[in-house]
Each structure stands twice: as C-alpha cells, then as structure tokens.
Amino acid sequence: MERAVEIKNLDKSYEETPVLKNLNLEIPKGTVFGLIGPNGAGKSTLIGVLTGLLSFEGGDVIIHGMKLNARNELEIKKLTASVLQPPLLFEQFSSLEFIEYVCEIYEVNKEGLIEKAYSLMDYFDIKDFAKIKVNKLSSGSRKKLAFVTSVLVEPKLLLLDEPFEAVDVISIERMKNIIRRLKQKGVTIIVTSHILEVVENLCDDIAILHHGHIKAYLDSVSRKELQKDSSLHEIFEKYVEVEQKEEIVDWL
Ligand SMILES: Nc1ncnc2c1ncn2[C@@H]1O[C@H](COP(=O)(O)OP(=O)(O)OP(=O)(O)O)[C@@H](O)[C@H]1O
Image 1 (tube, rainbow, N blue to C red):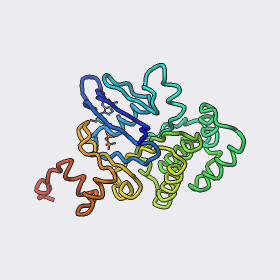
Image 2 (cartoon, rainbow, N blue to C red):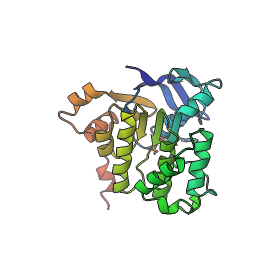
Image 3 (tube, protein in one colour):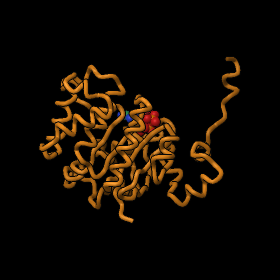
C-alpha cells in the first residue's frame, strides 16, 4: 500500500516541553484517517507539523515521497490543504474574496471556479455570506468556509483539525459526504475529532494519540477484531487509561 504520509521518530517540543515524542506513523494513500486522543494529546500539533507551519526538532516527515524540508516545502504545501482549529482565515476579506485569494495562491484553474465556489457555499448554507466579511461570520460558518476553501484548492492531502466542531448536524453529514467523495477521487484525508461516532463511521484507519505517543493504530483488521466486542469509545478509554474521578464531584 502506498503511503501519503510517513512520520519517522518525530520529536516536537514547545520551548522545553516535549509534545510529540519519537512518534512513528504511516498513513495509507486514498484513505480517510482518523486521529483521536484526549485534550492536549498533541493532535493539533501533529497537524501543524504536517502543514509545514510548525517546525520540529527531530525525525522525518515524508509526504507523497518528499521529505518535509526547506527544499520541498513549497511543493508539499501545494498538494496539501488544511482546516485548522481555529480556522486560519483573513478577517478583512469577504468569504468569496477569501476563497478566490487562496485559490490564486494554489494556482487553481479559474475557469468555473466561482460557480463551484457558489455551489459548495450553497451546499453548506453559507452562500448568503459570500459578500460578507469573514470577521462577521459565526464560528460554524467560519469552519464551513475554511472547509469549502480547502476542497476548492483540490488537494491530494487534506488535513482537517476538528472540522465538525461548532458545525450543525446537517452540515456535518454534508461534510462527511464531501470527504467520502474526495476519497473516491484518491485524496487522502486526515481528520481529528472528539466525535467518536463520526470518526467510527467515516474513517478507515484510526490512531489513538496520548501524551505525544501513538497508543494504538487500528487498521481495518484490528478494528474488526476489537470492535466485535467494544465500541470505539470503549477502546479509546482503554488506551488512554481513563481515571475514574466520580467521587471528586460527590459534593455536587
Ligand atoms: N503554541 C504553544 N505553545 C506552548 N505549548 C503549546 C502550544 N500549542 C500547544 N501547546 C501544548 O502542547 C500540548 C498539545 O497541544 P495540542 O493542541 O496539540 O493538543 P490536542 O490533542 O490538539 O488537544 P485538543 O483536543 O484539546 O485540541 C498541550 O499540552 C498544549 O498545552
């Protein structure tokens, strides 16, 4: 199986604090990959490293066979799009101006682009905001605008950090439809989410990240085996060794 992403012995710290520790991970091409883990596990940091926005101290990150370094950075950025948490938007642009600006950076073919942008905005009920400034949008609409833009730049690798957070249930279903459609077209999608039901039914392989380590890698075979008797929620609890703390709120 070809790999979209290979991460070898990755070390990433913020100042003196290590966050990703000797992390190894391989993500198959053309799949939807779920990255789950408790708050502070390092999911956004890992996504940030993959976007090329965050530097790292040790190890190798290889995307589509290219090592992430100064020489390949631009080429890798061109084949990668992301929805970050919080989404990275330009506040003084209108939604449509933002889309057009990002598409220009990615050198997307302009023919039919506006029509495509409007149809996707319509699908996510943000068409009425096309001429509205980004800083006036609600948090859900901001997320949807970031998602729509990331689709329009036609990436080979799509990084989605909490794409469903703040998004209504109808739009979550529609995002899932688009993600499945992109997968059919051969795009690799990496998704982080705390909504395990969505991860469970959307993703192929799933990794559980905890304290900067991959605690479990669930591929289709191990998922079938483990999920015979347990839900993803139970598997998650097991791997992150959830501490029972009910007595702490006894006073309530
Ligand atoms: N810019 C930063 N400077 C210093 N520490 C940071 C910075 N960003 C994140 N951290 C720390 O790194 C650790 C991992 O954070 P990260 O945001 O990657 O986790 P996460 O798994 O995405 O969490 P969540 O589910 O809460 O979004 C946390 O301890 C966090 O406090």
